[in-house]
Length: 50
Image (tube, rainbow, N blue to C red):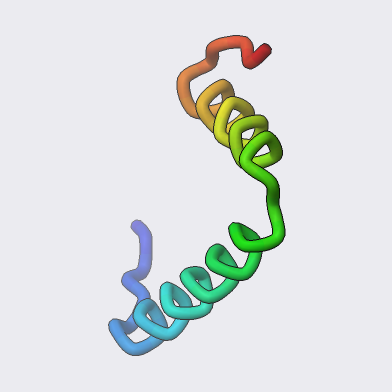
């Protein structure tokens, strides 16, 4: 059985994730973001990214 994470921990971690995503987004070019999105989609759906 999986233990539930307390709400405060969950909210703090999601806030940190948003900050990191914003920082990473601002440092990547559109081509880099597209490549990462293709890789993520391939991992999620099992299709080959090209």
